Image (cartoon, rainbow, N blue to C red; front, side, top):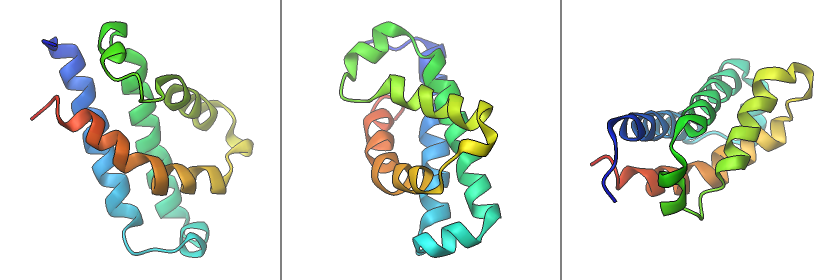
Length: 112
């Protein structure tokens, strides 16, 4: 599939934000994550970037990567952005630990 420049730009944003999240969590435990607001807030910020970029990627591109849970990514962004008191540390941690690396691998191949 030939990518348009907009999609390529949004995929780059996702890859960069993912890379930063992985750097933020490298070598830290869940308890350290919970104790350290600056790390938690930095990860939440990058999840906002990922969700916003995912929201703007074309539907045509999303169909080329159907295993990426685009709607869930966008939904998490909306929760972080709009439900301030409802952000669950466990959900943010699980997303960062379990889902960011596969997401980054899914999008990186399109921007190399």
